[in-house]
Every structure is written in structure tokens, then in C-alpha cells.
Image: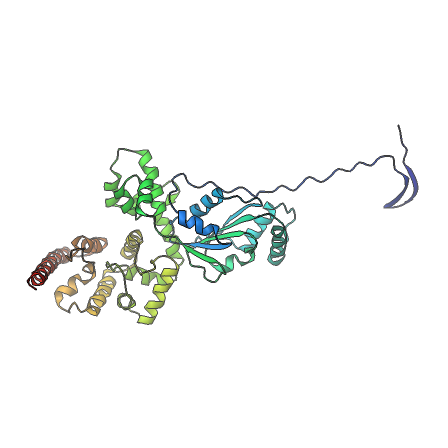
Length: 415
């Protein structure tokens, strides 16, 4: 049946219809969203059961730790293991790379587009209001704010309703969030990735180093990778776009010039832990200042909680010191430390102080290998006669320490 439409009156833009036979309405297409585009976690992921459980128990979490410790991989595995019906948002802030670093506005704009917003406001405050309004009505979501260097970088993106996970090399204690610090993997998990106990140990049980070695072993399964690691660890620990040295360097470049010098000099310390007094002697600063700078390095995860260095980080610091500090600077730092500990002021100690700062082995003997490692970066800068003298003194000191230890053991037995 044909129905005619009748027009009673036409007044320019407004038309009054008397009768409408048919009306066709085309609905707008739903906005395109991108809420489940997270990358998969690596196949070599192992362990971290306690950390994954900890993540699940808190709404807003800061996952922090040394570069290469596996923060992002932990979050990606968490995203795979849990259901988030409202979707998943992810943004890498590149907080430690000045050439790539982004701010909250860039992340907000990306999130709004992912949520289907066609016209994103230009002002950050307006973007933040719209973002919070949109996510407030959604089912549970996962919002990952990756590679953040400061709390200010992400404040507008924190929402209380959903699971928000922040990853950073710094302790972002300025955020009202649960703090989850990552440490190296337990030995069994490290061995599972590396394919052996010795390689796991040489990698310092650092997940990035283990991942690199896992990939390298596939390129040449029959090669003695442990032997090559012993010769040049940091130089070997790079494959494709993975590079342990480069990761450490980003953390180092985020320090101030004063913090960098402090880091290089106190890393001469070969004992298990370093005190504020010892650090002050190395760096020639006051004890309160040393205490403050030690805390700053712990916050940046370039120093562990108990003032120990991860061995790969210490090797990285040795390389830096070789390039950035003169021999006289290093020897003076070693002398100050030795004097603080009462080792005496004889020419013997003056000559070898900076390479003699090494821990004793478990049986109380001098760790000669550690002393030799301490001096190795400077071999090319020292006079051959000085080198010969240092070698002789190292042997002499080792013999004296062994003799003293033997006498002490005999005295103990007689008692």
C-alpha cells in the first residue's frame, strides 16, 4: 500500500508533517574499542606464584625493582591468568628513556580512544574527568601503567574501582598503593629458565639475563655458554633488542651527577654490605649525606635493601668507573676506606688499598680472585712496575692472612 506524506507547513529549516507514511532511522555504528590488546608474556616465565597472589589481593599496586627484574612480565602473566570483563588498558610511559618518555596527557588520550571516544578533549583535566566517568560504569578492568619514573606522571590515571598496576624502577611511595618489590628468582626457577645451575648463578638469577641466555642457548646448544659468561658477562648478555647493560644504563642516567659519582665509588666495596660510614669514606662525603644517598640508590633499586650490590650491577659500576674516574681518584677513595677501617698507613697499603677491598671467603681466607677483579678495569692505565708491585703485594697479603687464620685456628683448638 502506498502512503503519501503530507506537509502542512514549511518554515525554512523546520517542517511540520501532517501525515508520515514511513520513517527510516539508521542507527550509529558502535564506537570501535581496543581493550584487550596486551602483549603475551614470555614463554620462559617461571615462578612468582607468591607475587601473582599478592597482586590479586590489592586494587592499586606498585610493582618495583631493578631493571630487568621482570616487572612487566609479571603483570602480563597476571593479566593472562585473571578475567577482566571490562577490558585491559596498557600504556608504557618509557619513564627512564628521555627520548621516548610520555606524560599523563598522552596516556589519557590513548585510553580514551581505546574506550571508543572519537573526539578527545585537548585539556588534561577534561580528559581525566571523561576517563574517570567512562571507566566508572564499566565492569572490572585491568589498567597497567608501565615503566613509570614518578608518581606525578600517573596520578590522573589512578581509579579506585578497578585493578591498577604500576611498574617502576623506583619505590613510588608517594602513591596510595600497595608496594610489591621484586627480587631475583629463587635458584630452582632460575635454573629452569637458564638450563643449568652455573649459568643461573652467572646471570645473577636476574630474569632478563636468564631470558637472554635461554635464547642464546637455542642458537648453539652445544656451546659452553658458562665459560663465555665467565669471561665477559655484560657483553654477552645481549640478544636482539634485549640488553642487560642498556637496561642498567637507563637507571644510571636517571641519577644526578652527584648520585652517579657516589654509585661508582661505593661499588668498589667488595664486602657483602656497605655501611654509611664506609660509603662516606669512599665518596668523601659526610655520614648523613652518605646515608641519604644510600637510601636514594635503594629507592632506585641500584642497591639492594641491605646495602648489597647485585653482582651484575657491581660489574656495570666497575665498567663505568673505568671510563669515568681517574686512577688517582679511585686510589684515593680506596685509601680513605682502608684508613677508616684501621688497616694502617704503610706504603704497602697505600699501593694496594683500592684493589684490596674485598670480602673474605667463607673459611676466613682472603678472596684473591675478588681483589684481582677489583683491579682488572685499571690494568691498562697503570705502569708495569706498579702492576708488578701490586701483584706481589696481593700475594703477600694473602699469605699473611692465611698465616694469621692458621694461627687463630690453632689457638682456638688449644683453648
